Image (cartoon, rainbow, N blue to C red; front, side, top):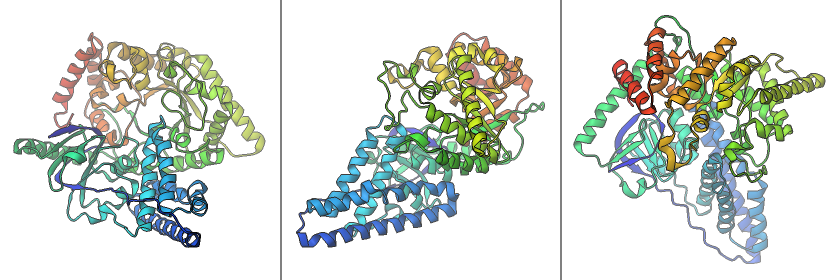
Length: 579
């Protein structure tokens, strides 16, 4: 039985199913007498205290294995159990409505869950799992049931669950968990982030796996392709065992180059850095030997909070990342919300085409206070290491000049206030709309660098909504029109004397590596787990060879022809790379 989900942590795991039951203790309503209220309130507060102790223990356990950044996942859990809208509201309702604690607490937590799940933000939807985790923990203390399924894992196996909470993942013993697969979850779920940090193969979003798999079934989890096979035939099992061995040999060989420069055989150096979204990913960067952060997305700081973060909160967050990456640089992308990323606390106008509307710097121009606050925090964080600022959704030089004026204003304010900040910070343009690519020479005359955001550049060039499943096959990274815009951007940037990087998904696609290298891309910024694979490819060729591959690819007429050509090149030159 084969299923296909979302691969979130690479590797191939083969083993027996450990099915995690995640039932929440039942919480029916029970009317209290007036004399019972005080005891019920105290019982609830004792359960909250016990849950807080557990969370602190888990945090400490995780800090030892993953460091402070990894353990920070539980900060939100602790906050939930000190939140007035949760604890005090539960106590008030117990006293006012004369109802038992389990029932009242469940109602309040489920209301939070629904709010998060109904959000259009994927990040908010993923945070609903944190609320469920806290709810389950407190309810288990209230009903005297303290089961934690993953602490019972009797032998090595593969965890199958509807969803894995941060507590579940933290309780995993990596020596016993070969991999995991879940019905729910996305790339930004905490379970996915933890899987990558622990380097456990994982596939999420399988929808019905828990209904199909039985405890003890043999299962294959392919975190490279997203394929999951339950009760495989002997021939399928053998095929995946060979694939697993091939992958293990390949990754072992990559370890040898972790500390070596990203340099072609004929001596051309290429910058190789990482994209991150959450500070939890910093640990992975150390393991994979990242030379800086090429794209630090800052949206989660706005999406995961009930209101806009303060300058101090942003400064502390940015400074933490900058200090961790010293002496390498961190490129911080300014707020890129709008489109499908809208915080619940921020009112947005109704737009017929939100992806063509108020998003990226366009939104920042409308919400000047938000923009200034973020720029001030970035400039202050620049005192702790090398920081660069990248502006998204720039469509003209006028946009970029407005951004620079905001930076100048933020500098002036900080200077006036006597606060330390970085005077010299490079300012870059994210090239992600066709007008920016076509006018790259004009932009490059006033920018310090250009960084190509291929996800949106492809969408806007081909007029294909990348989230629309009806036209998903029309979203082609290797369309000749897209490749010509990339080539033009690189050439125009170089003619103006600035370096050109790429922070879109295409930079981490092994199929594109030789093509982009041959086009002269100066910097590849990729997902942390792809760092060594991309470095290995770059170190295995000469720049002249890559230039030849690029020339041939640019002569082809369709996306399919380019993909077939590049697939053949990768198969021939890198037969050990699994695709």
